[in-house]
Image (cartoon, rainbow, N blue to C red; front, side):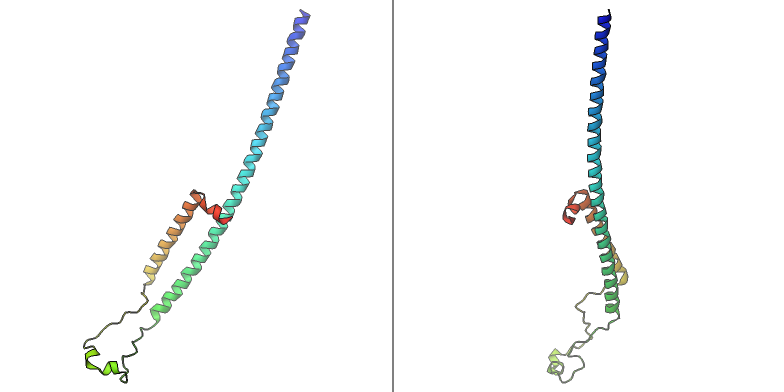
Length: 149
């Protein structure tokens, strides 16, 4: 009977040892996976930070371009329309030739299309939305971080 008890105690000790070894192995595996997850998370945070920095730079550039467009627009809207060189110049033979002289008032269009402030704002807003969508799509598809590295 004592021998049987000692055999059973020996079996219990072996099982406890195996259980402890299994627990230690599981704990080591968990620690390793946790460390890998921390590294991946840190890498993703770094990429996200770079993306946010790049987005801030792009937003700054966009704001600068908006200001430049506004000042250009205000310059264009305050600039008088220039007359063609032949108008008012009676020394020019084209003006004196009756068949080439217009009989009615003719309007001259400028080569640069004019936009009102509202339509320029609408255009810039539309472009901003497209840029935001493009950036979001690039982030979703994983394209943006690749081109930023």
